[in-house]
Length: 189
Length: 250
Image (cartoon, rainbow over all chains, first blue to last red; front, top):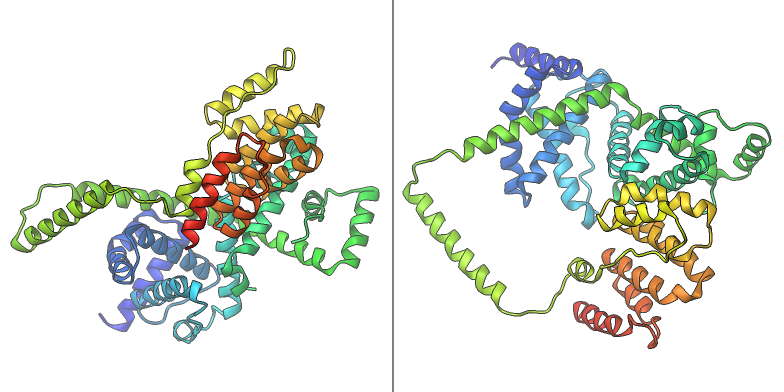
């Protein structure tokens, strides 16, 4: 496939992701998932690891696309660079060996600075820990994060104000604690 | 992490809902404490990350497509297939592996993983001391014994708002947090309860030791189990668990 076709395909995929176009997302899955699964299985991972890795990769791509990413060469190669780096970092994290070179990503785009990449990784990390909170915490903090007052939260969830204030404090503390305990947080700080 | 930080005030401050004297005091604290300031900044960043609406919607679509993709994948992989020679060899190898696993399962062996030990020992019944016609507690008790911890928690907290010293209810709240995976909160509750109601010391030590075990902190778990006194009903079980943890450490 020539460069122009590859370029068009990359733009189509990135645009589709930004629009939340289901057809595009499905074709990305169809075209690239098997490669990711094969890679993870060959590198000491499971099928579940492959699912998670592919999802995370597509989330990162969305955030990068929103920040103005343009892929000059092959979408497939760019995707591979993201997931292989993420996977190697993940399996090496316990050994404190981080694949730190981002040069391989920089050749693709000048618009996604390292600072932006770190910001996006932090965003994913925060969201992951938020999603792991107990349901009551997610409900209370979710509303507070949307800007609702504690009185509004109490009335919406049918709790007392005192309970909501106490619980939001506990949940917030727990969330911050879990994030800080994650080895990735230190890497991204 | 500083346990004394006003985490509720951090949220209110970010949302612009802290007022009057509370606001002035908080701002003074912020000026004096750089760590608190960092905590506020981090909290703001988390709030923005969680509250990213276009990303939320993208994530939901991705989740649904992932599910659809893997479901159709599963159904296509269950379709009958012609088995070639290579697959026969793989099948025979799998069978051999299965037989080996079965033999391994039949041979008695000591429990070795902290998580397995935790699962074996974490049992509890919720039965509160009767307090007249406290429907709140009866309802909570039912929910807890049906494993509906999320729903029981607000009832327990509502009860504690009026009866702050009800030690068995505090204990139950600690267990609920443990069940919900909030081990830090569970440990805090057990530690406070031990201080204020020494009669619950052995129970608190028992459950704290289990939390440490679950988190893989074997040394801390052992030290906590050793605090359980011989007069306690839990003493024998604690001694048994001590032996099993020591065998893991070897």
